Amino acid sequence: MKYNRYSILTLFGHICTDINQGALPALLPFLVLYKGVSYTAAAGLVFASNSMSSFIQPFFGYLGDKVSWPWLMGAGAFLAGAGLALVGFLDNYWAIFGAVCVCGIGVALFHPEGGRMANLAAGEKKGAGIALFAIGGSLGFVLGPAMASIALTVMGLRGTIVFLLPAVGMVIVTMVSLKGLNRISREAQHKKIAQRHVLGKDDWKSFATVAGCMTGRSVLLFGLTTFIPLYFAGVFRLSATEASNTLVLYAVMSAVCTLLGGHAADRFGFHRVIRFCFLLLVPFVCLFPLVGSVALAIAFLAPIAIGVNGPQAAIVTLGQKFLPNHLGTASGILFGLSVSMGGMVAPGIGWIGDHHGLAAALYVVAGFAVLTAGLAFLIPARK
Image 1 (spheres, rainbow, N blue to C red):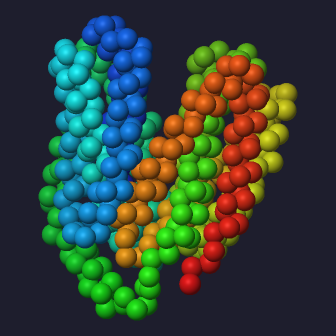
Image 2 (image 1 turned 120 degrees about the vertical axis):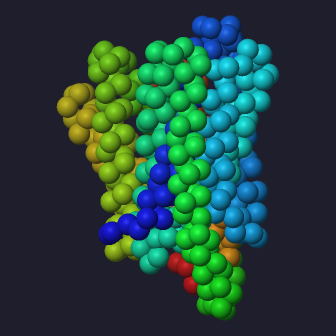
């Protein structure tokens, strides 16, 4: 598929926004060292950013369905970057807390409108377009910690100023493209009015099943990315660097699988891709704790990456199809609330790992894989 400039713009915006979410955890050791922030207070900053972002995203999505404001993508990316950039220049903890909340609000502003525009810009190839948009988030979470580590090592805490660069860049790109974005949005609105009888009513019941599937996938995502490197280090006795490298390899596989999954959904159908991927995932996640070879365990990462990341674009696009009159709301829930629910479950899985071992934690993740696969088969065909 040849992507148009507006699909590329949503990809760029997603990278520029999620860089800040990815970088925040990397700032915490510097805040503990130079600002005297306690571990509990540091964890509170991450919770504040994620919760602020997650729970207000559906509201901004609903707002975006009422009024079309593509400029919110630039505004959201700017607030996210500006909030994080301020962190290094503040000394009071609650001022830092406020800056982190501003960052979370920026993230919440971007995702619903970004997901809606990614859908509209994709034309008939919704799966591929949403997959490209989703990869932007993955790249942001990978680039953010690297960017923070380099900047703060060289410049100290005030190195957070570098996060203004992608934020300002996204504002410029959005303003330059605003005329075209508004045109796409107006055409979609006119088409929706003209075809309201074709689009039909929103199917909230079916959407809830899709959102549940996305939440289950989020638990799998957080659980696997947390425990894969820990498992290689604790069970196979790899060094910290070697164990981290397995996560880098898994991240690369995940990005490729996300893109291929979107193309496959357009070609073979959204339901088929979702069900196939989760069915593929179940046996490999269940058997992973039993593998006794490093090489075989690494080989297992490929089908696991397919199972977790292959259905992402299909799930989001199908969710948007069930809410054809509320694309922004659907994007806000699926990219915000559903994803963050997985992050909230992850600490509980960590507690099981602490008290019963890493294998037990992975078996809990496998249980979620079975549950999510079951939900995938409950998603009805769209009327």
